Image 1 (cartoon, one colour):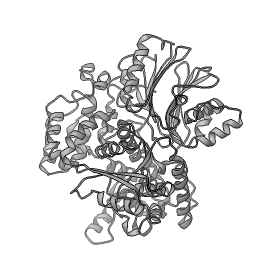
Image 2 (cartoon, rainbow, N blue to C red):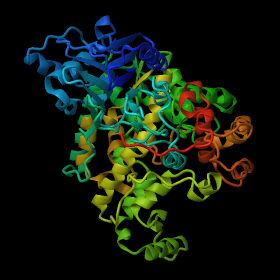
Image 3 (spheres, one colour):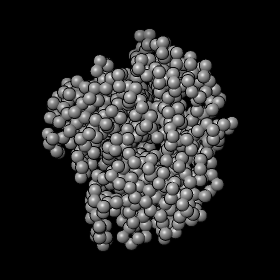
Image 4 (cartoon, one colour):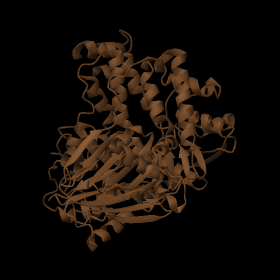
Length: 640
């Protein structure tokens, strides 16, 4: 697990001193991602500079150092993440005559790319982002793993001089060509609605994210070609039901954890009071032993506190449990850490407990296994379950569906989910994911445009077949909610130099889940039935909660209490960024509604706070400072 940054000059000017200075600044911003060492590289053709920070997990010897040059010196690689099937790939490459100099998966990836070119990417099972430069063809490849566990950002100099890329968004602001562009109004609006910026967008013009399962090929003349090497299939072939489905998922998860346990440093697990992380902990414990360390963050006195349930799981699973209570008294100090950790705006307030549990774990381990991904793949959210239970109702006209819903509320018919009142399933999903509603947004940021024209994540049409709607639901969760959660996980873990792996997002587990009949997960009116049945093999079924609580803190109360001065200072005692966007009087009324308890506006308030904290970071100044765009805060995007 590491961090990298680079500059590709289309005019062979990377050898100039200002490029060396820029790459060193960029790399220094990645020091928390890689505290164990650093490295730099300048290509012989003067087109490419690379910087790298290392967190040594596999082969911590100098043989695993990056940037890594291939044995034939024909290409160079910087790589963030882990290739879990690197031993199998190593064996295959050795059959082709490759002789390795290290035990690192980095060298395996480098030689695989040299042997199979970009076709090697589809052979990978791992979490990764990498930049690979082929010197003979003067071609740069940027690629990201299938699920988007590891981030990768890039920006283009507006005049066409070159490209910058990095593991963190703030690093792009250190471009040797200066600021890449002003804020994109439509992406700002998307952020305020969804409280994160989904791929492929960047908040600033001429910046983007590489998408999950995507690779970019940048030619010598600056042409960028984008291709997907993996996508969640829209209509997977369902072949597993009943006990066969459960056994297939059990085998896939067992294989995934066996692969992902490999490390040359101490490894632990997160442990909540839910289903996913206890299941990962249970399988890991069975493969290891009682020395396995598990970590939990609690909020005593709060209804959603999971400490008691996590304690019971730790005893039943016989793991070496560590926990820490985090309450409102520490909220102010933890907010300072949120400010430091968020290298791009992220309005997900579960960032607070994520940072806390990563800090707790890093004291004793370097690698953690997490339960992320279970809800998205196995239908763990109530919104998915309620939508699928009423799939057939979407055959009816919207007026009739609304009548059926209100009849149920009045006791004049069977109760129905509010989901059926939406014009389409896509409208429903967009609505439940918008935490700052359209009416509030129109008042607080009048004139802000709608989402980008090509933003089609929630496009659904008139779907009402249960199977088709299930696949759509999983697609939306995978490329929507999951991406926000993975971004939070990466920011929180890398802030504490902790590598977090996600076995439920292993390619084998994902592909097995796609073969399972989605309805298997909704047996007896529940959710995630397959994962619950697997967990019941390790703990009594009565200990497994039916309701999902979520990984959060009592933020609404904290904002009214210990964090109130932070809100006042951030939103009302200083100028807001971008200049001229927000109506301060409307924002004051919105805040007063929350402060007085008339409404719960915590999501919107936190989203606005996160934006301002990011804009005021010293390392963001080159890109977002008001004095660079005093009269023209918005600029349109240019094509990648």
